[in-house]
Image 1 (tube, rainbow, N blue to C red):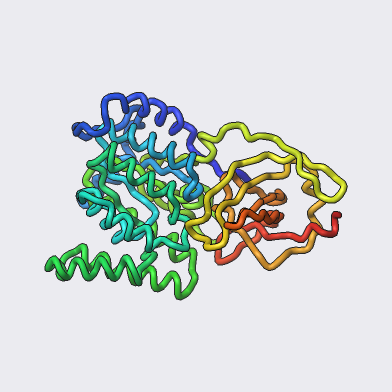
Image 2: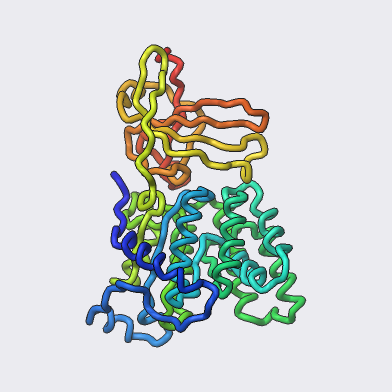
Length: 372
């Protein structure tokens, strides 16, 4: 089943992009972006229950495949559009202390802080030159951006501990920021100890709501993996966006950047054994940031003959849905070419069987040698 996203954000993003010519670097009065839906009486009644909550701001969530150059460029354009309307708060899929480091870097004269974060991200999809270019472009064109990290405490042994030391040095050990950092670190320890994706998803909702409610009416944009932005649930738990939509009725708007802005895929032919299949090509991804031996991978999806691969035996390797630059449905077959640092290319085949690994939907590698 394909993920369902609100297509109205495509039009909204286009309108906002037209506003960029007014200049992202100029300060402006905060206002609601164009075409924001009116608040309903029901929503107004619910939000008047407590003054502590953000009672009028809208939430615009964009799903992505991490470190995809094309998608990052589009996300930058979208953020520049919102920024031109007065929006300043950008929510991102990282720990709170990592976002706080980005905010410090936004005020710094050099890239030392950003480069330290980049080193901490080694081994993750965020360790990519495309990601660095994205943040540098935000600093250059939208310098008043304020980042909010709402994920659990990734890199708690490096970034997290370093930020605690910095806060202590600044005499902020008794501050809310220090306590929030400790909480984020504990979330990270729990997640990695138990390998519990459901726990992580629920903590992301809690962290998002806490940050959003503190803004007192400000609208925000968020960039997260497409899995977290889907309004569809799965057997384990409702995803982040779905839970937020229940908590803030009528104010959560979602879109998948990879779907909204993807060009029609190029159709090519892939031969397996003596049979040729039609395959859609979905681009190449730089993976040098989280792999020491591999530099990139290319994606194809077979558009016919998937039934030929239904009985191919599985190999002890899986690839989660959120690694793909396109939606994945049960029964589909994908072809990936991995390019190593020495230039050698390895072709692997993956099949979507509707299975899960650590509560994440996955594709499984299959052995196609029997089709030769």
